[in-house]
Length: 86
Image (cartoon, rainbow, N blue to C red; front, side, top):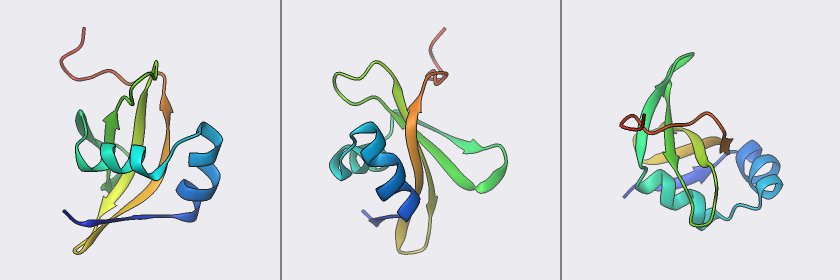
C-alpha cells in the first residue's frame, strides 16, 4: 500500500472540523466503498466510505501519485449514494 499524505487543508482545516482521525480517513482511502472521478479535475479521485456510527458517507478527494496518495480534502457528503443504491 502506498503512503498516505495529507494536505494542510485536509489535516488542519477539515478533519478537526468533523472530528475525524487519520485512521478513519486512511481506512476510506485504502479500502473505499466506491470511487468516482472528480468531474472538474480528472487527476482527482473521490473515494467514499461510511465510518461506523456515521449517518453520512465521507467523501475523500485524493490524487494518486507514483509513490503516495495525497488527500486533498474530506467531508461528510449528504448527497453521496453508492452506485448500486436506489
